[in-house]
Length: 168
Image (cartoon, rainbow, N blue to C red; front, side, top):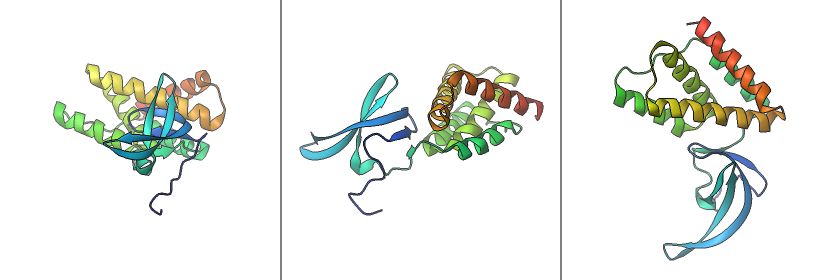
């Protein structure tokens, strides 16, 4: 991609690894550290943030996934969960690395693996929050991609997680 070009435009739905699913609703120039820059205004379900147009090509920001990608993600979720590290710090790093990568498959695997851990051991507060956040983001993005109701998709995700536990 050429410098100054962007893959996103006003009206596009995007996924930010930490903020989640949002829609680009505006583009505006603002001064930051004395330099005029162009920012996208991204509206989230419960707020908004500004994304530097210059940084919109970062790996942790992507367009919403296709329904085909969600089919692959569900297949991944249905597999047996992989054990996360037993050491707290290593496990936390594994979780943050998977979140930062930001791909749908990485998030699907993390949902599966955190759910698997939850069924064998108690999750700590932070892990519970990540699992909840990732599941909500997954369902919201899936709903936007497919046009289906979130309630039906939550049931499909729950079914896939049950299958995963049977496969463990």
